[in-house]
Amino acid sequence: MIVNKTDAYTSIKPSNADDNSSINILEFSKELIEKYPIFKSDNLIIDFSNNFNIELDEILLFSQLAMDHKNNKKSFVIVCNGFDIDEIIMVPTFKEAEDVVEIEEIERDLGI
Image 1: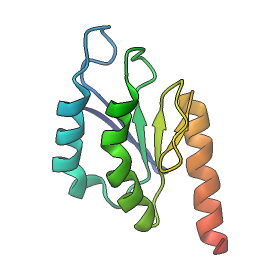
Image 2: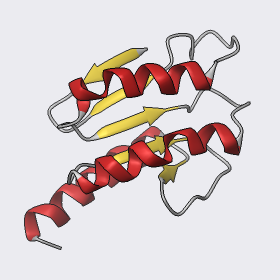
Image 3: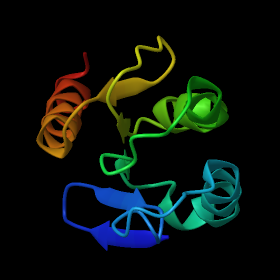
Image 4: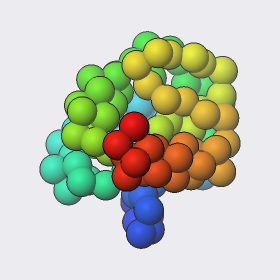
């Protein structure tokens, strides 16, 4: 798990996401859930932008965590191309994920 914290968000991606090797999304989701208490007060960007072989059922592993995080008044965005799921905010690029976090923070500040 590669974690990058900024003032606005924490981005997390699988450890081997940059080396084109197979990523075990189930193991990654278990690790994220296990370490979630560390990140629960952060806006989260889960970065699968370098993984072209991710399946819908693997993305759905994060749906409960995404709903819980949103109920905690924090953003949860997955960077991944090719899927549209109502429960999870998904965008195709990391820049768009940063924009979503910024917009949601503004909305929360305004009470929207």
